[in-house]
Length: 159
Image (cartoon, rainbow, N blue to C red):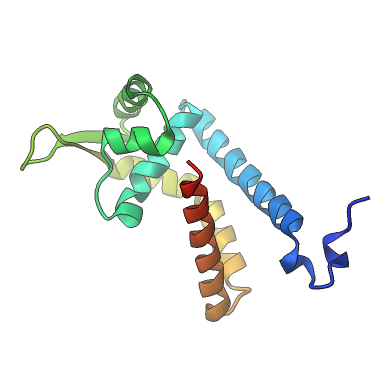
C-alpha cells in the first residue's frame, strides 16, 4: 500500500508523488479548457499550443515567435508547422510578417481580435487563477513562481 502524502513525516510538501498528482490534475484541467477552446473555434489541439507559444514568445524569449522557433518549441516538422500556421492565418488568429532588416525572417503575430476572443473564452481560467493567488502572501507567490520556473527549466532540459 502506498503511503498517503499526509503520512510523510515532513507533510505533503515533501512528497514527490503528491506533487505529481497535483501537477497531472492541473495539466488535465488546462488540457480540458484548451480542447474546449479548440473545438469551439474549429482548431486542432496543436493550433491552440501554437497560439499559446506565439502569445508567450515575447514574455519568455524577449522576441517575437518565428516559424523555426515554433517548430522547436512544439517539436513538429516544418511541414506540420506550415500547415498549422496556414490554418491559424486562414482563421484570422495570426499574421505572418517579414522582418524589415532581414526579409527572410518571418515573425508570427497573434491578431488583436483573436486575442480578445481568447481572453473572453479563458476568462474563467483568469478568474480562478486570481482567486487562488489571493490565498497566498506575496512571498509565497514568489516562491510558487520560482518553483514553476525551475520546473519548466528542468523539463526543458530533458528535451
